[in-house]
Image: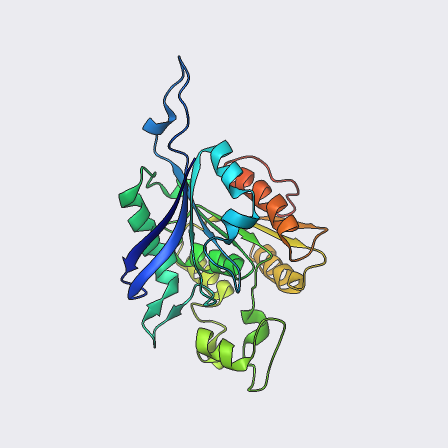
Length: 272
């Protein structure tokens, strides 16, 4: 397993940016066994949470072990507390960066499959929202979405007024990230609206695995999005089990979600 820290100039963010990469390209080849390096790799673009960095998954999770076990490349960019959405006013297009630019750049650099069904996006908390938003926003790129303890906060912050403050941040921060909060619902930062547009246009939706702990402060918004998908009869895997907003829970569910993305049934498949 090769571990790399890479910097490159992003046209979407207008500056040099870092990301962490895991590449299972240096495994030993045994006699009479096909060299796995001749096959294009599946890829997972894995997003960190609020106040985290592109090294969080590498330092705090078992993703290196899982990447090695399943021979999947993993790329971990930094969300920089911007929820992986585009800031047109600043010219910082975080959504386009993870949904298009990073995918294109890594495909040029490494032996990755270009097939949609071999390309996944995932994340936790802020990164779970980013995975859902951009997985559906760039549905032609991603075949699977793994969303853990997702911070689906448009439900909570839409139409908020100055002075609002919650567990994550305050009105000024949300206004700077999501723009006019009175227009948030129905915009391209609203996952429900993105999904509805895909359905209206007859486009194929990526598969979705969601997981949230029963002691997580984001359980209500995860249930709400799950209920929306149920109402729209959109097949997805939903896991709700004991756990809080912690790496213990994310380590368990990233393993389950990755198995699901690769074609194995998840531990608790509630919605189909």
